[in-house]
Length: 335
Image (tube, rainbow, N blue to C red):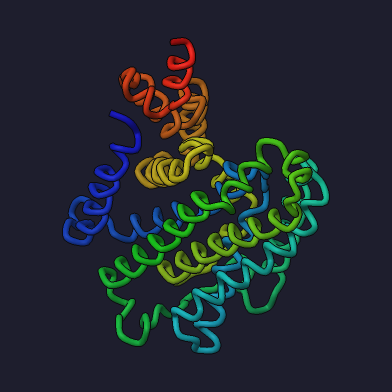
């Protein structure tokens, strides 16, 4: 038994469970699941930077919130179709990611992270002062409209399946990016950037591309959240949201593809079910995070993967010989 053999059955079970959510409203609130799916996409998009490229961004809420505000404003004021509004929110966030990324990658480490935080605060104050955002009240009463002119998004069930489809497409794009030659270059930059430069890769260009892709997917996640709740709020672009997505990624496992999705589900569930405790929710989440850091150094998914690999039986001698043909060659030379 290995991790790859378990991945597909587990994926099918999760997909079937998600498809069945609207049929069991007495057990699961579909709007809560939609919110969690938005943060799942947000966390996996952020992990393209942190886990696979080794770039820590303290300002990813700027892209999440920008997608929400752009989509909400276009749909509400200009009557843009919902699907085009979501796409515009993602494109605006990607463009903002390219600008911030081009500025931030001039430095590295904590200096890069501080630049992203500073730029994120500029974006926050822009949306605080801009006349169309509603300031502290937020951009309210965003119409859901229809999707592709056919599906009425005012129906929660229809909206749920549309959100599930868009998030699924976004997660597939994350998976495809990681398991591609582009993903190999990302990991090369993470492991040893000077060596990647010496091999002839335009590292700066790759970093800006990763920033843009991560920001664009984050903007789509924010746009979906704005459509679901019909609200784009300042909290979406606040630095607390950037901290939340970092927590989700570390909790789930930043060296995995979908580990951040598990972290997002855990944090969202804690925030939802522990809401009656008020301000103590932050303390409880902090304790859970401390426990996971101490017990699961690789994150929840990363640690489970290590346990499965340790329990899997070692390859047989014949299998080893097939996977390593030099073994038979050495035996022949000895004879």
